[in-house]
Image 1 (tube, rainbow, N blue to C red):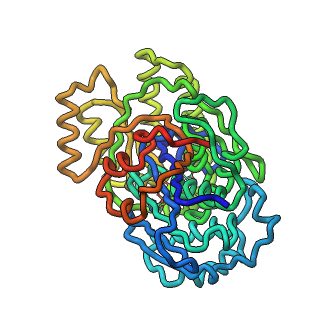
Image 2: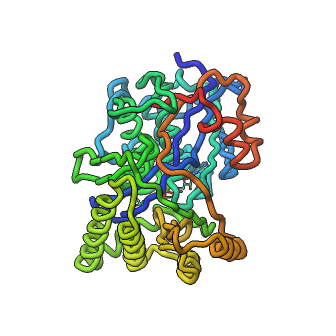
Image 3: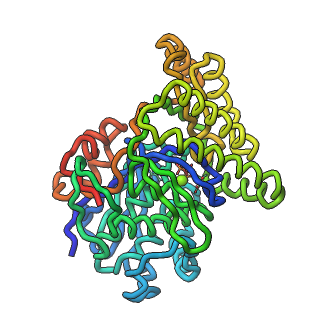
Length: 424
Ligand SMILES: Nc1ncnc2c1ncn2[C@@H]1O[C@H](COP(=O)(O)OP(=O)(O)OP(=O)(O)O)[C@@H](O)[C@H]1O
Ligand SMILES: C[C@@](O)(CCO)CC(=O)[O-]
Ligand SMILES: [Mg+2]
């Protein structure tokens, strides 16, 4: 029996090239961020017949009687296996969960609770989780293109794999170097993909892969049940990336569905757009394999950013606020900007041209963004993947819920603040 409390954590990601085309089996490049989600599993309520959820970032608290969950649907065997990449959500389980979710009106809360229940019932037995409280806090903006859904899914999948006895405690510390994926990571990643399927119908798997394994990758989804190709990019050249959140709300599910409509209705032009995106990602990959970029390569990478954004605009996934981010960085000539993640709002990245972007220009740009209500982020790329923190008797759900901002969350439970975190 696993002892509680414990925390799991997984990073968000930034897609540098290839969002949307990744869904259509084209390669994409992404890196883990230092912004992360944390999930606390604790026994903070005396009631052993109830399951409690505390998701304050989305203003959601909920509880279910443990015995109301459809535990009877799965035998021991189905609970132990690793789902294939193309496995659909189990229709019986989806149906059984719908009545437990029927009182939740907000789509944001609904999709988080659906993902939670789907993974919980798939991976745990009633006795593993009766009476537990699950609290989520994130330093990532919710629904802004930085992989918040996947980082939540990986936190759930890892916690439930651990509670259900499918994986052991990890041993790696932050500074340990790994050369090979652990079986445990592959198991978590496969289940986190099922969680992403609860959040949107057709995920490529890139977001959960980065949230599980960390680092930077070239990722390509394969046809049918063949596992995706994930090539890690260990020596990413230092890139001066500015992340800007327009704070315009959007949903990945809706954007992916809109692109799918275009791909179905205009197969020829959209096919050519996706092929061009592939060519861009492949050339960027070759350039980014070098640990340092000379001026010419850096300029080329910036041009590829510009081209990739234009193609995403043509697929209809930009937004006037993302265009404002781009327009203002173009006017000041400080680098090249593209949307990142599903688009439709959320975040953009600007690859800064270090020669052109004087401190004064950067200050002017930040001022414009602030006036528009946009938020800029400083974050590092290529951090650790999914982790576990045990022996945390002083961290309670109530304390975690009371933390006000990113800095407080990082200081209280953060992977960068606490060397005791271990990684799968
Ligand atoms: N801190 C959080 N607490 C609870 N649920 C969250 C949290 N962060 C994200 N979610 C869930 O993930 C959903 C957002 O997922 P969505 O895929 O739309 O955006 P994203 O993952 O941030 O962006 P992208 O998929 O483009 O990278 C929310 O609606 C919510 O259900
Ligand atoms: C838009 C998309 O390509 C990236 C979302 O972060 C969707 C996916 O790959 O699952
Ligand atoms: Mg998402």
